[in-house]
Image 1 (cartoon, rainbow, N blue to C red):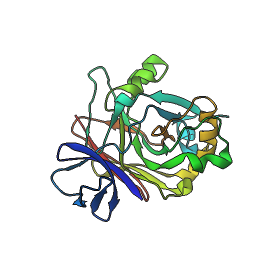
Image 2 (cartoon, helix red, strand yellow; image 1 turned 180 degrees about the vertical axis):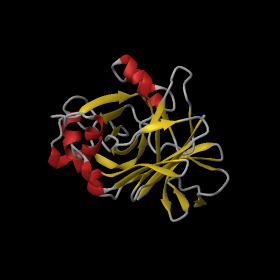
Image 3 (cartoon, one colour; image 1 turned 135 degrees about the vertical axis):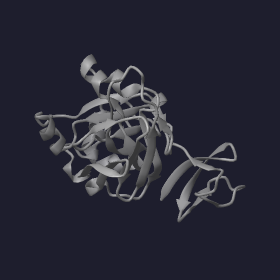
Length: 244
């Protein structure tokens, strides 16, 4: 099932995608075609926090000349950085280089604290596409990642939450202006999703709607104003945004 949030007739609704239509959870509204001029998809989730994982693909670690970490490297992105499909990514004036990073994201279903690997599926609502937009020069300048990862619009999410999905071997791609820039599979993860959820929930409480971004493949690269960037994940869909 593909769950969505959308703006329809200037109100926000939740629903699911069936074929080319949105079926709203509000019983007073009928099915509406996704192509309807009054339907605008929003980020499918409003997280209290985004927990991002750095360096979680083996080829990416090799590309950077870094050793495989012994445990996950995590950082936070604020909820104010979230935007939805087709929303603009704003290029900050203070940044000299802004990069795309395609990622599979996990959406949390219910409060999770100290969960074990064998129980993680009980806490997962589903999966979505995520773009961990990064001001690369500021990341290098600061020596830590908060400023570089936290600008408004630096966390595109969408277009839907797929609730029926096996995440073990999904193709992950980034397109920049129609050309493939990143391509890998989640089978290249260093830490799988059960390990990530066990590790993160042992540090902080995960709340319903929180997002875990599972890391990006090799070949991250820059975007410029005027570019269109697309994160595509097998069996989920395409997250399209443009840079301004």
